[in-house]
Length: 292
Length: 306
Image (cartoon, rainbow over the protein chains, first blue to last red):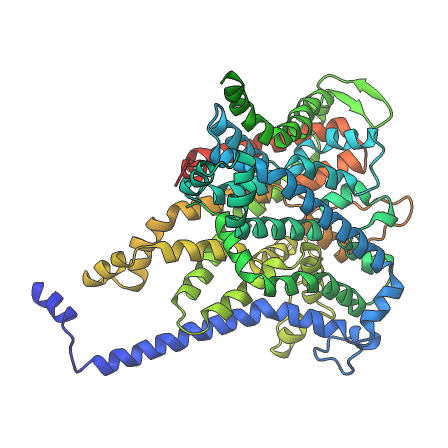
């Protein structure tokens, strides 16, 4: 047995080439699988874009490659549907909700990460529970609250509550803030900084990656949100978002797949562009959502 | 001195106040209210106590049970497939020497695509008359099923969509895989364990908590599964929102009707709000069970400091 093991460890000169050959094969196999998977992941996006520039006639066929490149389709969709209104509403929802979320959630996360007080652990557990709870659970009474303020039919029921903190963002920020060594805030305190100044001057700059991540997540969540606008704004077309408009695009505007895909590209493009500029922020943020 | 300690004691409260108000206003109060409404008949205009009528109605509401079966199907099929696929892709990328960064970006990209846009794209891509997938399969003489129009395949169509956007899981798994101590593999290699044995004896046990975490959060997310099913059904059925007609989710043939969809439909399209509250309480109970599992299993999740 020992002999066999020793032989296995010992660098045997003869089979080295064979092993190298196998390693090369393995290298090729891995990358071949990766390339095949890439095609499967990117393929749908490519076909969506290709279809978006097809002519109306070609969109009725199953041809894959556009015969003519009708970039005008992207202009046509603005005439067929009130896309600018949808974009404006979506932007208003996303920007305000993100700003409000940051304003309210950062102090909460900071308190959960740094202050010592009775019930801190319980508070954090409740944050996690809130985050996990499906929004549909409390939908009826919450809807009735907004109905009483006559705000149903608008996007405000989705924006205003962001002033009261968002569980997921609080959770994520807190997970990051606990990793900042206490020494930094202690040093600030020795220098005579109050708690609030310590948060603003010392902690926030250090937490920039996490803040950027939650802001991006929140923005994307709102940009993509379908359930919220469907619940509150479906009945009022003036307040439709891109998600609502897109879901109804084909049936309401009776258009071909090419224009539907052009609208789809338009909804995806900003998100993908932002991702390419902020990829690292994103990936680090996603990692924060996992367990350590 | 007393003023200072009072300030110190009130400070956490001040910082937490936005969330505390939100928690009371948008969670505690609505939950209590949901229990109250579950014993009423309420349609936004008339409120009438009906005792257990809503609960009894649930027992014979066949659509509700169909939606429970569908949601269960997604939990049992979609969640494990996503975890396995996500792990496979993550494992592959961590072993690539060339181009790992590019592949990671490519694999992650679909996870970012807005749900409505992605769903719309898939309904188009997979439609058997003009869809590119059929066009490609057709060249080798294969007839693709009517993914979003055939009740036998519609949930599989949604599963394909879910696998396509596996990027978030992939990133979490990659981080976990890279955290597995290298020495463990070296020691195993000395013992002659390679490939598959290393994977089952070292990788899996070490990253087990992360896998479990992904599975449990996956279940919780799937209990809320709404947008993709709603949009796929709406687009595939070609339903219009003309005046007077209300779109009923689940096309084709209630095969994609999920529990939250039915709750939404009952509460906000049929305005059977009392009954919707019964469904909401059921959803609450099931979600709480999985949340408690999560909190029990992953105390590390809420660990005090690192």
